[in-house]
Length: 253
Image (cartoon, rainbow, N blue to C red):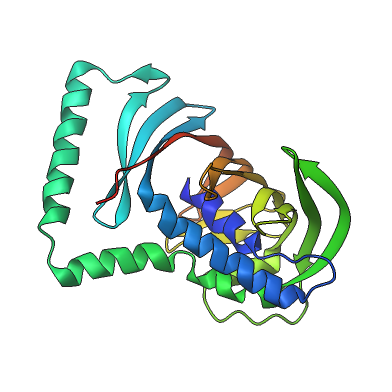
């Protein structure tokens, strides 16, 4: 589900009323980055529902500084005994590799994972924000904010170029300044990652987060509906929803 993450994360950085919007945006980015690191304290379930293929279920486990997805179900069914054995062997192999990693490769892997969100730091300069009437979501007051590309924005990183092609509406928790819900639409084709993939204009995406008992905000749901070209050839229908659940705090080491 990396496609949705790359597209939606840029509009996490949003503002609030009667404050310096640039400052609030920068704080929202920092909050998200802190949450990303804090998520390594948990394991959780990820259900990836691709309408044309069915639901694949994975258990996401922190493993030596970055998440590891261990498949536990395929097409809506538990893995067969043979498939479960192969997945167990794959997990054990990766576990041994990471536990015996030299400092250089380990630090490089962790750095790459953290850098997936570094481009967010440009978001405060990339959007014009408009405050809409407040609403409550799950009993918590939220700002409702409209974000549109700011004319004249000059991106410094390749991923930041997508800011010019997305508009969004976000529900932001007033107390924690965290995204509760976000809806985004592409105004023009958006390139994703280092592969030659482009999401078509008019693609609609949604993101939801939830607050755990200890105050950490984590992903609850991601969805995307539209079309994309992969390697600039295939015209694929995108209709995918990922649901995150069963967050369990791991024992402190």
